[in-house]
Length: 143
Image (cartoon, rainbow, N blue to C red; front, side, top):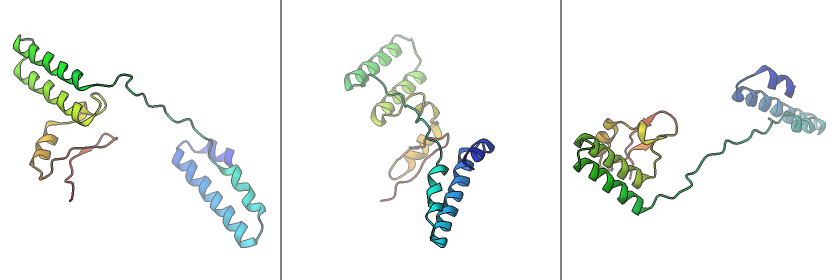
């Protein structure tokens, strides 16, 4: 049965659901008939173990000095005319936001929108909640 379910269904949730139903049925049969042989088959209906995805961690810790150096470089680029005022303020805000929150630039910060910050600032306790999926919402933190 396990092999049949694993071949028939592609979705991991469907596989899990069918196998859990079968395991629950075997437990029921074991209890209702007082026959532990049904319970012994439970072992054969487990999903195969999958390898967990390894998350990469930055090898280097970003220090306060690093942040100061980045902000100085952005300021110097603005003063020398390398970047305009709009980009100067944008880079400065993103650097400070990333430094204080620990959010990763490409994975999280790049997805944030200006309206989210505008709405967060209007709240009594400004909070921008970044969910791990592609939906980013602003919520009001209750006391």
